[in-house]
Image (cartoon, rainbow, N blue to C red; front, side, top):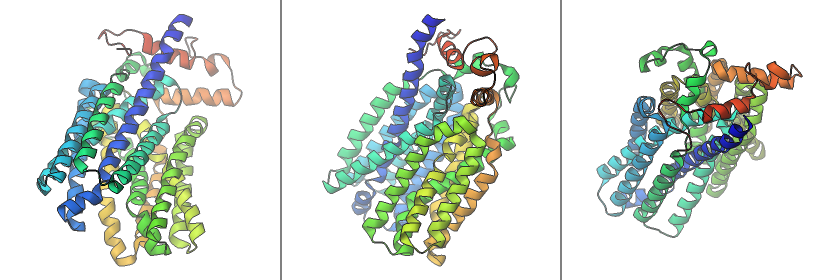
Length: 451
């Protein structure tokens, strides 16, 4: 037992590290495109409306990737899903770069962005499925940390985009270098993923919420899928609306200049990242539902301070609370969707699709309302959806193995039996030992985590 645990413990760590790399590179890839939008607009001489149509190409591709991701990951696994996605990301980004620099036109850039968006949707589902399985294998909550890594990637990509804009680096060179680097490193990282189905093969079906494998349509018919989707939708809208409109809301609504408005967005992103880093131990201690409810309250209070209080320092405090409150909803929704490993890929795909409605419909809806009632008033839409996410938070309650793990943690915390009911399972192994053993045991398919 000691020898096996020692040999396999690094395997779980390597898997978790590889998922961290995938999340970081995903954020870096998206921010690479977003950071060069000014150059793309100048190259095309496009209007704001035309740029909106251009960005829609990536959104269409993302929905396509999300739609097919559940089926792809169910058939070939999260590892292959990330690898396929990495190629799509690179091909789409490089093609779009050539189209921008060499004047191939609007339609060619659109084609590149559809491919890029497809890769983005596919990698989103694939890495969340693998991350949820790695979370179970590791025996502690780490999904918010994965999403914090994504935030770090976006910050790095945005900074690099600003630098290349300042240095007037050709878009094709920037996109080609980043596309190739992201593809190669993500391919290497995905090769170190564990097999998410191995946890399923050894998990007791007595505690599983679903006794049989569900089809795509059966997953969509489950009320829990829709309710978890509402959580993800509300929190995704809270995050995405800040990215799209917070600087302008601070400028138009609170009288800041352009530089200060952009700086406030940086404050929001930093609060999001900090919330995701600090949130994991809170989830381990209290469970998803209490943390989700508290997060929604904090986000609502913060957004209310921004909208209703016409004092800039208080509004900035509100932005910090908004970022902290919005930080954990999306990762906890992904973890909840993946509680049953047998339907994890399909359910994560469905929930992510609902969440992406926020990125499709949110910007034009808030922009339309902002034209008539101002951006601060338009953000009341986000206010309402965050409340809805808080009300739906009960759907994210831990089930199956996740519920059993939370029960053991609470028993240890409350001073319960430190033997069979605390640190040990029914077979006498510790949670971490059992997770390591699951990774060590060979399967009939012959695929080992180390390969």
